[in-house]
Amino acid sequence: MTNKVDVVLGLQWGDEGKGKIVDVLAGRYGVVARFQGGPNAGHSLQFEGQNFVVRSIPSGIFREGSVNIIGNGVVLDPISFLDECDALQKRTGIDPRERIVISRKAHIILPTHRLLDAAREAAAGKGKIGSTLRGIGPCYSDKTGRNGLRVGDTELPSFKEKFQKLSALHTDLLAHLGFDCDPHYQDAEFFEAIGRLKEFKFIDCEFFVDGVLKSQPVLAEGAQGSMLDVDYGTYPFVTSSNTTAGGVCTGLGVAPGRIGKVYGIFKAYCTRVGSGPFPTELFDKTGEDLRRIGHEFGAVTGRPRRCGWIDLVALRYAVTLSGVTDLIMMKADCLDTFDTIRACTSYLIDGQETSDYPYDISDGRITPVYTDFPGWKTSLADIRSEDALPKAFMGYVKFVEDYLGARISIISLGPDREATIERK
Image (tube, rainbow, N blue to C red; front, side, top):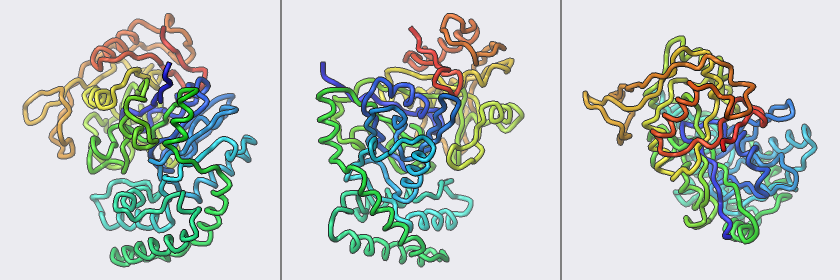
């Protein structure tokens, strides 16, 4: 049997709970790979009474004997990455250098990328994207503009010269934007981090993954969510990479035919961080209750998340884009106390009702049309068997499956590894 790359994706605007699911699934895979995104991607994992948040480190890091790939589609900040590694090793005793390999083609975030991020957001004023200010967008801009530095460049004698050339370009841009800063404020710390980064094994990711697949499958871990995809998300309020299944091929160097299962993760309601359209957003007590019950605050930034009812129109669009084979429902237990559960099943746009996702939802013309379900009014938190799930909840599950055209194979009822039901 030919081994495949199975994929875990977020299907909404990120924060769906990908870290927990990768951790749950990672025990079945010897190799876990991040294929896109940067250090703003906070994946929360909870087990054995402890909570962990990983950003650039793949979520398979906690499995003994695992190999964790940082793929070429990722942008890597050496300073924050090593801070993350140091904190992990201090807390767990795990030496990340023994479990992480890094693609030579992954691009490097410079300190000036972070300054450019802040400068552009400041210049945008009310039209700002809502960036996490970690330099990710500017780094991807340099990548597509063919100016970027890659991990493999650190092995070249010309690396410092390349750095100085790009830093000078950034300095000119910062001056043009009128941003008051010292562009060299972190140069010494950056080069110290580059020296330590070389203690990790660098790989040619496309060949490495091909070699792994000769003997075992690989689990690919996405960051952010499908509706933040730079091509298919709510542009321009998106991230700077391809967060859908197509990003796996370019982000790891694998052919489309080698993609296996696609696990699509979604919350039983919906959240979003930062700016951008959100048709089902709630500004009332229900929205506040969802935020409070679901502890909806950014794992890395701490920012409060905007909350609303599930949007099945957008969710079906995301399922279609990535060819999702298995759905995973998260945080259904957060809806236990509601009398009525609502799901957006169509949009009203300029008086016309449609269940097709439109080209642009950024102009505020959309009114969500809801289908209502009776609440189950039962705590799901301690249920560990599908047979014990209440009838009202399973009715909601079946409706979602029928609407999306895919099966919900895993139901998560809490942050811990054990709070997971795999359906028969």
